[in-house]
Image (tube, rainbow, N blue to C red):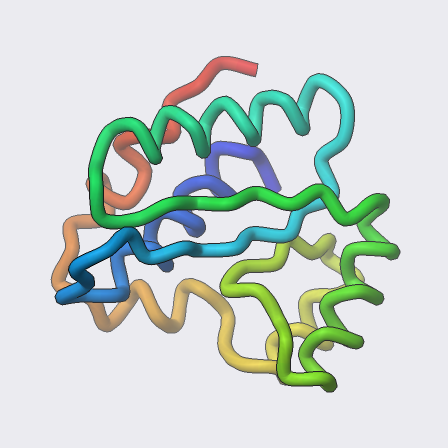
Amino acid sequence: MSIKHLTGMAVAVALMSTGAQAKTEVEWWHAMGGALGQKVNDIAADFNASQEEYEIKPVYKGSYAETMTSAIAAFRAKEQPAIVQVFEVGTATMMGAKQAIYQFTNSWKIPKNRLTQTTTCPL
């Protein structure tokens, strides 16, 4: 899954909240280290600077396996983040935790192109 798609999902989830007076914080656990992790941070910073309602907080949790293990433990403790990046092996496990993002976005009245407007960042 590309950073573009992941960021689109992060923005989409952030847009689900309405009526907030202060910034709504959206914690996003990911497995993108190094240069890709910096891109994730840059995309989040650009999005955060573009509006006043939401603040995406990307958190590097280690490898894909470490991120998934942390997410499972956090879910069991009822302390999970709003968004977790998982790799294909973890998809079925995570879908049991809540829902896949496409199931949320299919019911929204937000144009699909708006969900990824802020994610055009060359890698």
